[in-house]
Image 1 (cartoon, rainbow, N blue to C red):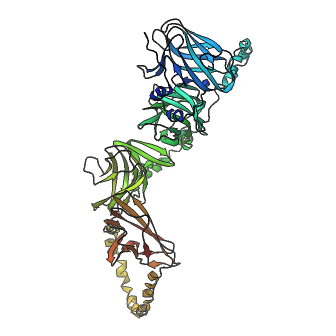
Image 2 (cartoon, rainbow, N blue to C red; image 1 turned 90 degrees about the vertical axis):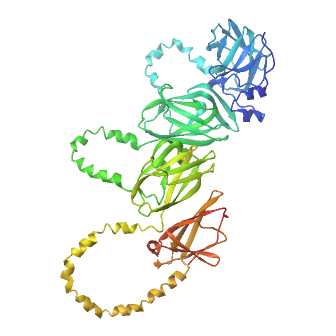
Image 3 (cartoon, one colour; image 1 turned 30 degrees about the vertical axis):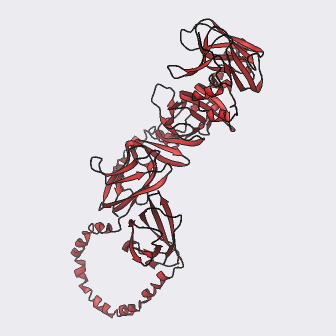
Length: 616
């Protein structure tokens, strides 16, 4: 005999539904039965169990005569014509639907036949019920039934079938175009407006109406307009567990998903993923919960205007008329254009393997799985390398980014430890005389890494500009300039001894007067940003010449008790009393009016929110 005991709200919550926070706050979620309701979402029951079937679905099981479960706050504002249940029955059974509690007015009976252990749908017309805050109860009358979910049909849906007299409708075959009305996903789609749902329920809490999609459940939006292409998808969602995603399928669940949106955090926030796809036209989109329940508020498709326009070019077989364009093979030279890694590289713009471009809180980044990587081809190292810093985050400890040059078969030249769960600049010092053009790989080690951007720090002791001088073997060619011999006429140079004006130029101690310019701190400005990761920090400085004239030389003073300097780039460091004196290199000494020079330092330990800095 079946064991009988009341199933209270706490047992329902133990079933793992993600709506628990709303229910625990004693605020009943608003039910939207026209879109379907999971049976285990109820507000009181007697004599039934909530069990998990082999396929993962949770059901209200063992409903026999007198057993029941109650559902409150049902929105029947469009009326009630019929109720459909997805259930299995051990034989001929009857479920009675009552208004209010188990002793309330009978609205109708749902009759079931034996389903041989399979879940099937059964529908019954019921009395009309209009209201946006109604309570109904499902009561066992005959047999033994397990219910997976239920849904209601609004009264308006029954009034239209009454027009089966509409052989006139055949006269309106033009109206099949109306079902094909497309959905504008570029403007955004509310999840509760899904065309179809499976293992999902529409709930409302804290003013937000959303779909609670159980693991492996999904919603479907039909006839989605993708005429402007698709470059990404944004979803406003939440999940109570880690390692949860919303997988996006097109037209069918039999194919592979086109995108996987990571959902993190117990509060609603916008997350997304960038796509490279030439998908256009009208399609059905399936959004599937993966890993755990996902609460989905809405989603939005990002257009890719350029993509649809380009397929028009292939339509231009007129291009064959332009065979003259083979002149453009000269453009293969463009791929060799070196990438400026000193000014910074955004991770989403570079080649990757086993990584996905994501969008969250207005930050676009690459989520690199452990062992995956991003790579910058033709990176310009002409200024050498003294370090690398990355703006990154990781959800687990013992996570790092290994940096390789040209090949993953060699040893990494450095490793950056990533410890923060929010995006932060982290850095590593590198002792390497690397120069020229190379491919640089950033590999996630230990756990996934979210990489926003990275930047290479120049080596102040590197003389990159001089390798360009070797390019000037043209200078040796210049000795071939017999034109110089032609210039023995340059006894005019002896005429230039007349340039005792040059000695007049010793009057260019006016230039030494210019050393007074460096001393005129007015108009010279220095700003800085501090990026600390607990055990160390990186400080970026920017010196700007706003004096109204060019300056040759500048000095920045930083108190030694406020920073420690393990490494620096683009400057020379000396000490004077309580201060570090920071001076430029030969190539960034001269600053025209309005021009700036940037440099940085890395230190260990902790640092305050501000430091004392002056510039002369």
